[in-house]
Length: 298
Ligand code: GDP
Image: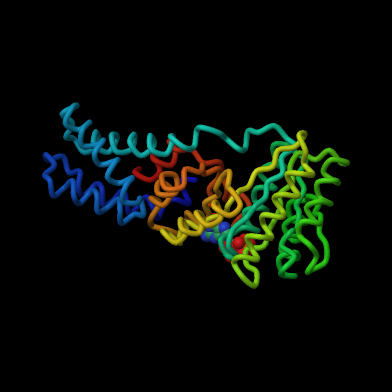
């Protein structure tokens, strides 16, 4: 993960270091720290909370050395992240599990499914892909490509088929073949937003009904980290419409603003399950609050 976070790190770390110089911090320095965090997409409320806590600790501990201050800030950031992430870990749920993967086109949904398939297969586990974005023929082909590449089976229908019917079939075959994981690709764009959400709701309803009590169904949203606050608005809309259990934050390698991770946690209260840090199959890993905070402020 650290390699892909280089941009975020360089930027935030560099700016924070220029504030923590070893001299006693003035009110202006604290303001600059606030501005730096907000500028890195951390979000206003979270920034205020972090800076307040850091300021109190610095006072209590009479800390002034740059390294000490950095350590306190790092602790505080991982504390904020831990609040949400460690409550449940979707990757540890006992199989069989159906992951419905939702998100706007272009966020990296298909790529994430491919990477996640490889990640789970390596466990080892029996993984299956499900092509429930039937709106675009290219989406079915792209998923087939990933299935071939990773070496897992795929359930697909013709373009234009009912996505809920694809999911129905997939769950039957998952049960018959004793698969551990089904990764369901869904549409990220339809004629209208309302249609899209109605389709996703139906897919989820059918998945939960067919999964019964023996299987767990979880809904993951793929979010592009480079979209900043827009991404958060997107996530809120999906959460209201279909209900989300976890997030996968992609393209963290492409943003100088790793702070989006904090804003997402705070504003949505949904755990980040994994992060994508590149276009290759290995560029996906479980999210660790501590590692992330350390990498961000290395
Ligand atoms: P979808 O439309 O949501 O299914 O998006 P795709 O999976 O087709 O991805 C859109 C583009 O984003 C592709 O060019 C991917 O290679 C790229 N992409 C996906 N995940 C990442 C990531 O973590 N980092 C980078 N740099 N690119 C990514």
